[in-house]
Image (cartoon, rainbow over all chains, first blue to last red; front, side):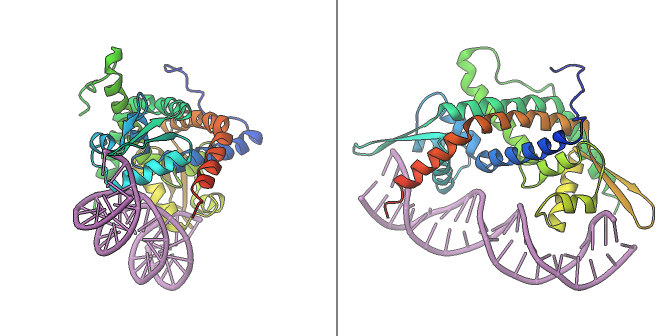
Length: 136
Length: 136
DNA sequence: CAGTATCCCAGCAGATACTG
DNA sequence: CAGTATCTGCTGGGATACTG
């Protein structure tokens, strides 16, 4: 589905128009949950095996303790992460991405294909835009 | 500028971890551009035919004039929207999604499939979580 | 170790008056 | 019509001291 294929546009009115809106709405649903600055990174980090809090803090570069906690809670609440507490001393808590989260990530990966196809074009567009608007 | 995109990932299974990171990073690239509250809605609105400013203001429910302008500028800058000015009186400006934007939207649509598959599960997870944490 | 509590700031976002 | 300018509140997010 990469090559020539340019039938991307929606051609029919009526039902397609509504569908477009509905889809845009659904996309936002997802983005509101997982569009945060750290969500994806955390899901990826917890995808293959359980990870501990401090481990995440070290792995996810630049994240603050606060945001790690908050994002973790949100992901857990949405059922994208499981949190397992081992009642030991010192405490041990493991986070792991759920099956649902992994499927989500797989879906998101289609975005990487798009990004890689168009990264150059985007950069060029920005350059052109900035050049055009620098006439001040 | 883009020097052939040095791929840290690919091939071996042992490289899955790195691959995950690279992809997560790319996903964020996209999300940073299009993860805003209104971007998707605007792209969808401008997907099928050129739309005018005021038209968008009416169509995109709840958007403020300011955010419409800002989002429009960002999308234009990234080459996701074209802006055409007709030097008439009163002025007429049309925005239209580019091919690139339409492809992006198509990629995003895979998310709707995920959302629809799991919407119930997410809601259930939230209920369970909220119930569990309501002991206050 | 795995958080919470607190303080603080920057940028997002709403509202709306004004203008070419 | 298609914006810009401006004021302002809100929230995402950083830093860090403290705690079970």
